[in-house]
Every structure is written in structure tokens, then in C-alpha cells.
Figure (cartoon, rainbow, N blue to C red):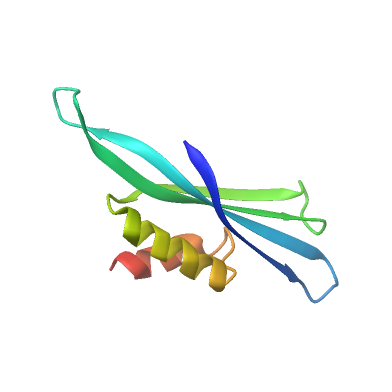
Length: 97
């Protein structure tokens, strides 16, 4: 399941306008016997804009944490920094390190 959590926008040097959507990604982790263990949270980052070949770029990173508080903090930092799909993996790796 994905739910829009935050949004940011910017104008690039050439004048192209972009918006970045940050979505909360929820998946369920299971024990080895297949029974549900807990929810796991990740993030989706979608860049939309006129300067893109296909109009959209998207990256989804699942299973970052089982803490709703921590994923909320991470998504807020991503949106505040206007992090795009190109750099989100590096930022997430630094955050959880």
C-alpha cells in the first residue's frame, strides 16, 4: 500500500517546473511459517515535470524500518531537502547507518 505523505516543488535552471511526491509504503513482514509478524515501512519518491522524457521518474524503497515514527521523520527530511529519485537511495542509506 502507498499513501501520499508529503510533496515538494522546485523550478530548475532552465525554467522547468517539477513536483516531488513522497509516499509512505507499507508492507507486511511474515515469520518463516507464513504468519504475519509486523508492518514494515518504506518510501516512494516520484518526480513529475515537463523537463523529463517520460514526465515521471519513480523509485520505491521498501522495508526501511518497522517504526512509523522513524519513517515519518525520514519522509519529512526527504521532502524538506527536496530529495529526488536519483539521490534518495544514498540519503536513505546515510539515514539508517
